[in-house]
Length: 280
Image 1 (cartoon, rainbow, N blue to C red):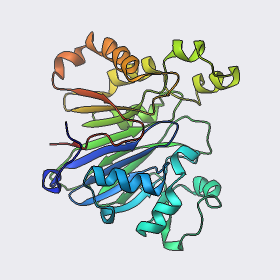
Image 2: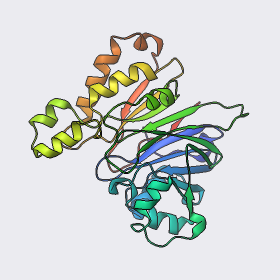
Image 3: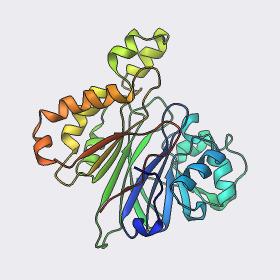
């Protein structure tokens, strides 16, 4: 399938696409109509502009950046992108404390402190905590504002070593999910990473293993769920084939397979954008 989509195809529907995914850098596009924002921006300005062009999304239609946590693969490009596009950055007060000196000069109007929800690009963004070894870390559930006749929702959660109760509540029944399938347990422990790093990744403050995610999906997927994108795969400790086969093996024996025959699960590319997912 071509990665090129016309703006007419986007229309009034909510859409999402990963622009980059993995330890080398993460960025996710979310929007509706001709209004969009980014969840994280851990790649260069050049990469962001190139990948937006591939999706036929003008950079002028990006209205903000939300930061899930302060690790470099999620914030590397936020300063240059915010300055170039003249857009605000949304983050909690504690995250601002640790990123302010790392992203360069910004206007005061570009520094927006958020708590548990905010609105950007005409969309309501509900924030929930994940479990990661950072100052704070969050996922989001994105929806149309209250009163809208269009009620599709997108859940995004990466960088968590365990599935929190808040994640369960926020991700249940989303129409599309972008969620972490970071590593395969066997590949991690048999791989070349040093012991301390293996312990960190597999801890409750590290990253989700394929089977952990599958167990979460069994609770999150409902009859309306259309698309799932597996994100933040480790380049050494996982593979697209291993992640898909593990998760599909667990899901296929559950009622979910019968209730969602049209459900599509894909893996986010590492450096290039995933096809634009438009929720009909």
